[in-house]
Length: 203
Ligand code: IYR
Image 1 (cartoon, rainbow, N blue to C red):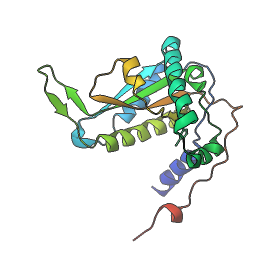
Image 2 (image 1 turned 90 degrees about the vertical axis):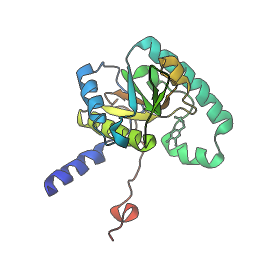
Image 3 (image 1 turned 60 degrees about the vertical axis):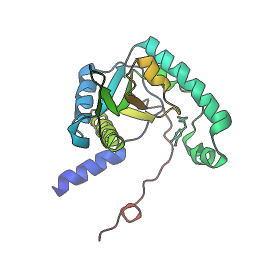
Image 4 (image 1 turned 90 degrees about the horizontal axis):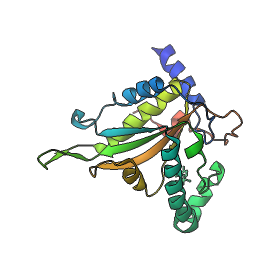
């Protein structure tokens, strides 16, 4: 038990968010297994309130990039506060999102508030925010375990993703998980994880 928990900690510590990826295509079976792992997450009333749009088509990736860069330009030019910009300085991010066309796979993740049934009634979901968060955590760890890097990319507002991907009104896009083999030339920012004492207490 101790050994296994330590091993997972060590492996998890090696996970890093990449913003540059190799263009090599990835095996769809691996992606499917990881998405199915995400689907095992605990969730409200087991309604499984999520949808994963797996995008590998270069034309769709280009459209997503185009729309994302429009909202990011506005964000960096007029919405971001000085404090937020200072917090982001260590990450070296700006409105340009080349990884959206460079990475071989984008997993666009939607949370499902309700499903509209054939008779027009709404089938309601519960604890949707909690459920989708847990599920995305499972997905990121599954991808890491498979040797793939990922980036949690959250355009604000993300609404264009529902239009582009034709998802129903009961769903809201949460993020684009950018997936691929990590580019070994990417200069990883220096980040330090908090200690046990900083994040937890035993009562
Ligand atoms: N969505 C923007 C800004 C951004 C915000 C946070 I908080 C980050 O951790 C990273 C970026 C962007 O992707 O550039």
